[in-house]
Length: 362
Ligand SMILES: NC(=O)c1ccc[n+]([C@@H]2O[C@H](COP(=O)([O-])OP(=O)(O)OC[C@H]3O[C@@H](n4cnc5c(N)ncnc54)[C@H](O)[C@@H]3O)[C@@H](O)[C@H]2O)c1
Figure 1: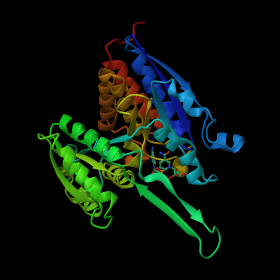
Figure 2 (figure 1 turned 180 degrees about the horizontal axis):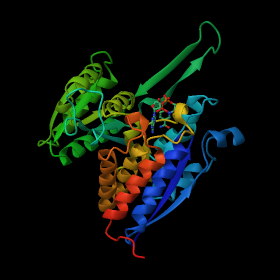
Figure 3 (figure 1 turned 90 degrees about the horizontal axis):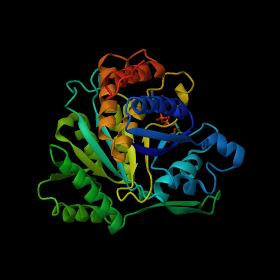
Figure 4 (figure 1 turned 120 degrees about the vertical axis):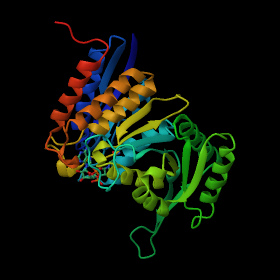
């Protein structure tokens, strides 16, 4: 039996709704797979914790999390707490503190979901976006001077290091190499940003030499939105900076039907620290508490987590369960259906029960 310890941080808004649905499907996989044992500890960190304690997580938060094999994260953000406090108080310190430098965001059109693009069905859009997750525009470098005065200055300095760019390029080329099309698109903005982005391009070309079997091309980020929308079939694996990939992956989620189906994995490829798995979406104030949050992104990231832990079979069963539920029309309102979070969860659990190695005996 393989035993894994998971730290669940549901946090804010619809985070607790989708994470509890995610735990339900993980428990179903565990129940029907005698080789899999999951210990899941839930942490109450987030905006309510901040309102009570003045911090989003305790000072020794990272030390507590370090003991776990993986982190299963919901979303942060509350209407009455500034976003930079919630993000920089919980999610980013985990990503940066654990050097989860590869943010992996698969997108495809799931069967049964009607995407917004005409003439684009399952198979036409099947991408993985690799986002640099440790530096770039979100390095936190900058400051404010003369606060509140007319001459106030705010700087936000993007940091690109040779080490940081080289390792994310290697990760992206390797991932592209592992996919059937062996094709990588490097997103850049080196026409306007002539320092860090030019170095980004140069390093991409250097790393490409290590992967002669991977075809690659380069795209300016603005033109990339055009290509993603009009020629989705021409893309496969994509690598972009922290900010560019953040924006492009929301577009990717929307083109696949909804942000509610878009997962993400914050990976430490060297496995020095636990990696963190989460839906791309935020805390979605507009639907919190209505029971209609789409749990598919969370289920998909749970599948990414199982795969990262080495449980490929369980991950595949979960992905098949997701595709089955969608193809049967068990869809939440964001993707055109009437189902609740609980309906979708039940459909996926039923699939797991019917398709796992061990089915229940009475
Ligand atoms: N990783 C994160 O924790 C993260 C990511 C993005 C935004 N946020 C935070 O979340 C808060 C709200 O941000 P926002 O409104 O810009 O983005 P959001 O992702 O929360 O919501 C955008 C839209 O998508 C819909 N949506 C999102 N997830 C859905 C789901 N699972 N099912 C159905 N519909 C879904 C919402 O209803 C909303 O209309 C802010 O505080 C923001 O800072 C956090």
